[in-house]
Image 1 (cartoon, rainbow, N blue to C red):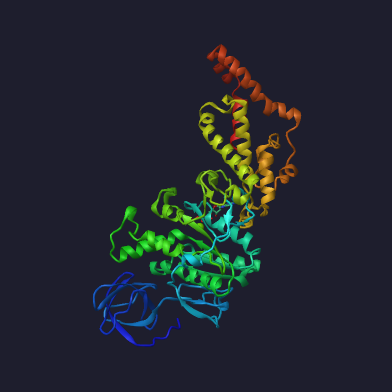
Image 2 (tube, rainbow, N blue to C red; image 1 turned 60 degrees about the vertical axis):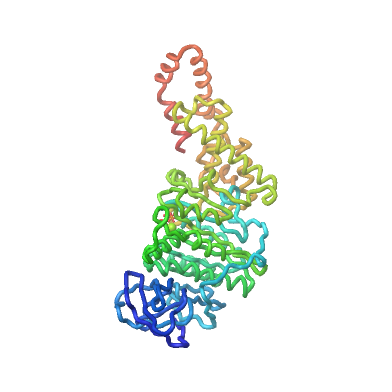
Length: 516
Ligand SMILES: Nc1ncnc2c1ncn2[C@@H]1O[C@H](COP(=O)(O)OP(=O)(O)OP(=O)(O)O)[C@@H](O)[C@H]1O
Ligand SMILES: [Mg+2]
């Protein structure tokens, strides 16, 4: 890094414990957040505490192999800095602002401290505008806010990265601002793949990528988010452009803080998290704000340990967001991608004053139908679908069709699903849901609605069940059900006999409706 030392303040290493290094300074004790260099700049250390009048304790942002007691440490006289300016567009950086895309170091950049205060309350602005993603389930049930923060919550492998990549794909082309992708503690491969995809898609000229992936030491993962934010703030404040900030994965930031805190010898708090988790996270999240000069819209993936949404890391993150998209393992295991949990996800934009009355009422009706189906699931599991009243059965049919209609083929998964990705406008998504709720598709098989774009594709894909076919699978259980209720009133024995007599159609029926 090209940070020149103005005054030569030299110290010596007195202790090295993994990533934590204690350094003694005779002349001048560097302030907290100062960046120190050892081994000719090969090792970078950030001061996190002053132990006494002579010693500081710092966390290494690079591996500390080869560092020993007595080594010389040089104070750079400033904090960790990130490059900002037009020159950083279309480039890929590490936490120090070194280009990692094998191209020349960007010229015409300024260096700014990664530690900045969040904008003052006076400078903040809010405007409630919807950010369309082209993903049905999100636009209908969890509308995102332009200039808001949205979180994609989910356990391991439920599709956070895929959904985030799809959003990048759908939104980056249409928005005229700058996009910044920040990879924190995730796979290096994913970063490389994203870079290549963005290059092929031709959206790289308006994009910056910053990575501190899982192979980096905790100090680096802890600071890379701040470096990305500094760049975002530059585009917002100096260039007055809107910024889309994508972070995968904010949990790894918290986790890095936990490792740093542990290494620094602080007492752990609940579930081993650092006692300062709340402040660390809000210091990052509060900087993602809208001002009169521009808006930073942020979408963050949040790993949820053990799928437990009450985990302190998830709880703290929830409180910062304007939209929470919860991904469910159950839906993922049924192949219903994107595996958004339709009842647990919510957005503060889903209010009638913002999305409009029709959209609001439709979303309410969808949730009500799905919630009713959720309640009926136990009854269905114990007694079978046949025992439900005709009205309840209609609710189940609607809910299951809605669930399937809200799946969508993604551009990001074209290679391995073999289905072409689809972008669906909000109008088409709402129309589709409305028509399903009006029972227009009750005669279509559920599979006709699975992995389609707009609802008309279902009509192209399959014909509704023919009248004679309809009497078979559709009407049979109903009449059977009627006879059952008759039988029920007459004798329970008859009911049992009947179900014994005809085991096949029942099983078939269950399979038809439960696993399409
Ligand atoms: N929309 C989708 N369509 C088809 N398959 C999907 C979809 N989303 C996720 N998957 C499947 O789930 C797998 C895991 O997805 P992904 O890598 O996005 O998970 P993740 O939540 O980011 O996991 P991790 O926490 O490990 O980073 C994918 O490789 C893919 O097979
Ligand atoms: Mg991931």
